[in-house]
Amino acid sequence: MKITFVLPTLSLSGGIRVVSIFAERLKKRGHEVFVISVPPSKPSLIQQAKSLVGGRGWIPTPQQQPSFFDNLSVEPKIINRYRPIKNQDLPDADVIVATWWETAEWVAKLSPSKGAKAYFLQHYEVFDYLPKARVEATWNLPLHKITIAQWLVDIAHKRYGDHQVSLVPPTVDTKQFYASPREKQSIPTVGMYYSQAYWKGSDIALKAFSLAAEKIPNLRLIAFGMEEPSPELPLPPNSEYVIQPDQDKLKDYYSKCDAWLFPSRCEGFGLPIIEAMACRTPVIGTPVGAAPEFLSGGTGILVKPEDPEAMAKAIEFICGLPNPDWQGMSEAAYAKAIVYTWDDATERFEGALKAAMSKSTQKERATAKLQPRIQVQW
Image 1 (cartoon, rainbow, N blue to C red):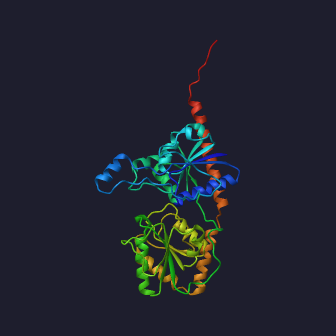
Image 2: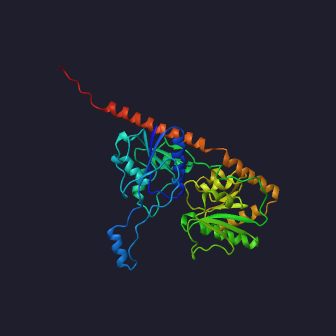
Image 3: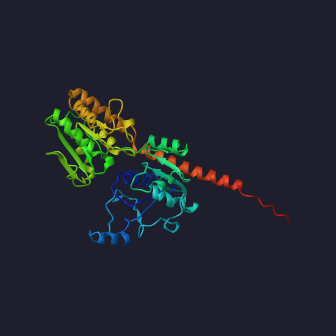
């Protein structure tokens, strides 16, 4: 197949990472893969004027950031400025995949020669900082939906009446995320991803840690994130914190923990869940994203949303387990994380792209049947 992915600005986000993995693996399977993206948007003259009048100075031009496509065999084409992707930017293809609500608007307007149209949805992007009506409208566009979690499939069914959605969950690279069987830490230790974004729930995890530390005086915290800790959201004293860690070292942070905290208020999937589990670390998480599907059967603990007290009790429980019981939970987490591979996921993604092509062909045939037939008499 000739496959085109249309991406927003490249970054080190989890969504870009998943697309990069599928693009690379599809190419290795012999498909012709083309990836196109847009650079960061520049501030408008009105925004610059408001900034100057407000005494904030000239807004610097944003620079292209590192991304998960760096050093891959699939090299993205980045157009000259932030604008909609158009027909002339793209080769003809068998299938074209939108990967973000705005790219879905662009893809819907492209010529059929650019491929059957698909929409890879990794979240329900109806956020306060986005134009909600436009985001919701993209779910009704005539694009074949491919999504990563059952809760997103359910939204497509119940809210938009789409019963032909392809479910393609991501998974974890066990060459990157792994750990040998081990015992509990000599000093009780939990870990978390630190973010000031409200929906990531770092405030919940930090409150839970402080409550648990009252019962476990030597409790230790390991965290990593993409930003400096904020005075409004400080880390506990003596925490181990790493900013923008080397991707190859993430396994070291996961595997130094007795439990990993997943406190998100909202999540498309939640890759840290399976990354920690692949490193034999049980997860304590809220029931968002894929957490309900993974944190069952003794692999971790689900806690109520917005409930740091419940998360603190779960920390106390796991850190208080006898070593053989903790090892049993650790091995159960590991076994569940590795049962579904990236080969499995890529095969499903291929099937989803073929479904998009089949749906497009059926639509063309149906349209052709509706065309009036003109009889010419000689």
